[in-house]
Length: 611
Image (cartoon, one colour):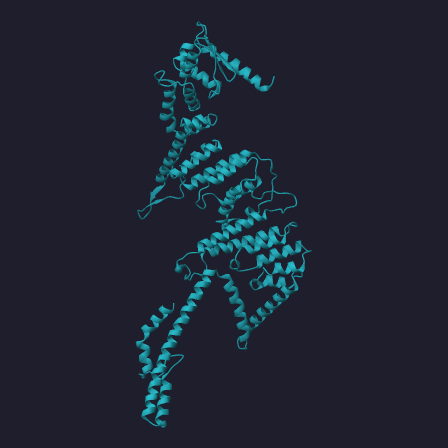
């Protein structure tokens, strides 16, 4: 005899003992009810007076004198049937949050409605559910827990939906009340929110962590629709994940050095995918460390591709606040693979760059004409470039790391993201040191990633003596160091003629500055230079008009006077013209000055038309 049969026999025995306590002992039973292995010797009259289902079964077999009825798949099992039978016999018992869902379902199964008896079990249970349970959040949570074993009947009777709506409404009301309690008047008499005061409206977070994942998902969705704060929803997701995943996975271990169980259950995979789908769209609704933890678990549990891509996109949108330990995602593949998941990090970087480009692609021309040297996206690029260089230095010693993967990570960021290439040089040097058998062609290809003009003096001195670099790179470093030295000597002796060195040095520094500027900053600089050139062109046109007028006057003078008078007049006209500045004669009233003053509006119109 197996264990399940023993349990059924013990259950039947205990049910008979409990039944003998409240049934009529002096009246012989005339019907036997079988429920999930338990048998009850009862009486037809109290049962058929309350239950429409038992009445129909007895009526159908009246001629045969049926005395045994089996109730298959009765919701709630033996204990719930005992409560329903007690109600039929008029035995008092208490309706509580732990049994109201079962009573609603069993009353529907047994058809214990008002049609067969007044104040029947169905109406009693419904009244308690509406007037007591739905007014209290903790009771609703308890009822939802009981509904887990009563689906889909509990859904059909709207028990689950009513509890979920009540929880969402109660949480929303608590949040509003908490917000009002944090309002206070400032010294100037203005009403503002006290951010430092502790928010007391999220006490329900701990209560919801006991619900099964499918019901929890429906509760969170309802809360979003009711307008609960994204921060509160994020806090609830973190609390739920801590209880469901922290025991078996490395979700809360950013270093990823603990041994994990690869034979994870389907339940854990479902939890991760569900939580990812519930994360609010707002940035910073959950900390980035939580997103990295979910990504580690998603990779380890082999979650769906959509789940992992969603996490990578969310992380990429706020990668500038990530840390190196979070980015070092261990690889959970075969033994011949790299130590860290390089492909995932590369996709995160691509998402970051695409998000950065989408923010920069605006039609408003004022964005490109901004004079600010660094936009917010440029600042985030600088932070991410340092993070990527440190990441490359960490993964470079891996013997299984292929050159293509290493270069793919280094080339993901745009060229203007790095103002200094010291970090990239350090990572490449570590890679060359760990992969000494690399061919010279691959070394040259790898060193092309470094802009030696952007190396600091210390890094340049190290590179000049680095035997691991290709000869071409060492020569380039030595040439640049020589130019720096000559420029430093010229600055020490300003009387010497060192104009060519200044010009060369200016080209190098300006090239580095141009590379360090973002495309929109370069575009704004070009727009300003173009505007200045157009203005100068308009001025030259005005001077050309002055020349034409003077030329007409010269022809007129040549026709009226001899050659000597002509030369005198010609010298005077030449003295009045000024091609590169204003005339030094203060009392002059030449046509050139009058034309220049009267045609100032023409310059403005010319600039506007050429633009």
